[in-house]
Length: 385
Length: 245
Image (cartoon, rainbow over the protein chains, first blue to last red):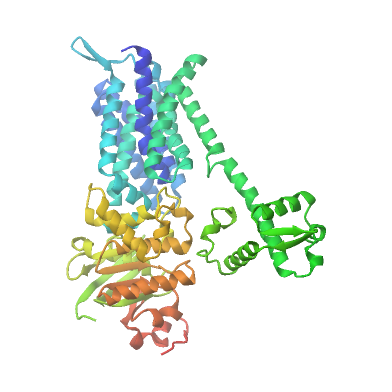
C-alpha cells in the first residue's frame, strides 16, 4: 500500500472511530471528560511502553484505556464529596495524571520514540511507516490494524446497544427503572472512549483527538433533530476532515493532524453560521422576523381596538404608534400580503382573516394555550415558542 | 378496590451524603387506588418513588411489588419521571420518546419494530398527541411534553403507574386531560401513584393519599384522612384548606 493512501486511510478510520463515541459524549454533556481521558492515558501509555516496547500492543492499549477509566472514577469520586463541582474535579485530575506521564517520559524514555511533541499532536506522518511484520511479511501499518479493530468493536456495540444507549442518554431515570443499568452504559461508553483515544493517540495526539471526538458531533447536532442522522453526519464530517485535512497539509507542507483539526474547525464554523434552523444566520433572521411580527400584532390589535376612521388613517398610525416610516411600511406590507387588512383612501380596515388572526393571537397571549394556533405556526415564527 | 397490596414499603431509609431524606418509611398501597403523595419541598416524595423503583439504593429497608422485589416485577410497573429531569433538546421525536416505553418489554439488544410502533401510535392517540408524532420534542409545549411522557408510560401496559409531578408546568386543559386518563386507569383496576403539589385538587382528583415529610405521616382514603390535622403534621404550620365534601 502506498504511504499516501495509508495515511489517508488511518486518518479516516481514526476520525470515524472518534466521531461515534463523540456523539454520545456531546449529548451527555461530557465533552470535557474526553479531554481529561486523552491526557490522563499518558502515564498508562508510558508504563505500557516500558513493559511491551510496542505502541501498538493490545496490552498497552488496555493498560492506557484503564488509566482513562481511572480518570473518570477519580473525577466522580472528587465530585461526590460535594466540595467542588464537576469541572473543577476534571481540572484537578487530568493534569495530575498527565504530569506523571510527562515526568516518566522525561526521566526514562527521553531517547525513544515517545516524546512530548508526539504526545500532544501525534505523528500521523510516521504512523503509516510502522508496519506490522509477521516473519518477513508486511501486513500494513500497525495503527491501521489497531484503529480498525477498535472501530469494528465500536460499531458492533453501537449496533447491539443502540436503544439502551439512547435511552440512558436521554432519560437516566427510566433507563434505570426499566433495568438498563445507566452505570453500565456509562462505563461502557467511557471504556470505548478511552480505548479509541489510546489507539488514536499515536496518530493524532492528546489534544487533537478531543477535536475529532467533539467537533463532528457538535456540528451534526446543529443540523439535525434525529439521533441516527446525527451519528451519520458526524461520521461524514470526520471523513471529510480527514481527507480534506490531508490534502490541506500537503498543500501547506504542515502537520497532517493539525490540518485535519483546522478543517474540522472550519466545518463547525460553516455549520454554526449556516445551519438551517439552529445556525447563527437563521437565528438572527428569525429574531428579525419575530420583531416584525410583534409589530404586526400590535398594529392589528390597534385596529381592532379602534373603530373611528381617524384612528385608522395610515398617517395617523405612523405618529400614533410611534414607528418610523420604514417599519410602518414593512408592517403594512406584511399585513396586506397576508390579506389581513385592506387599505381604502388611506384608511385601514381589518379583513375577516385579519380579525380572526387577531382574536386567536390575543387568546393565545392571554391563556397561553396553543391548540388553536397550530396552523399559524407554519407562517409565523412568533408562535413557535 | 381489591384487598391485594400492590406496593409494600418496609422500614425504608434513604440518605444523601449521610443525611436521611426518608426515614424508616412503612407504607402499603392497596391495588386499584389513585393516590397522591403530598408533602413540602424536600419531603422526599420523588426520592420515595425512585427508591421503590430501584433508581436510588436505600441504606435500609425493602420494597415489594405484589409481594416480590421490584427487579422481578419491572414489567408490572410504569414510571413517569419529572419533566425537568431530561434534556428536551435531545435529537428525537415525540413518537420515538413514546417508543422508549416499549424497551423494557423488549429487553436487552432487541430493537423495537412494527408492533412497538403501533402501540406507541395508539398511546399517542389516547393522549391526543397523534398529530405531533414526528415533531422534535423541544418544539412541544410543556403540556404536550407531559402528555408524551404519559403516553410513554401507557405503552408499558403496567399494573402500577408511578408519576413524578405530572401536572408541573402544564396548562389547565392538559391537567384535565391527564387526570381523566389517570381516572380511566384506576377504573381499569390499575394502581396509580402520583407525586402531587396542589393540595386544593387532592380531594377532586384522588381517592387515596399519603402524607410524607421525611417520615411517613399517614396513608389512607382521602375522605378519611385528608384533614387539617394531617396537613398540619406534614407541613408544620397550621394548615387550612377549603375541602369540599
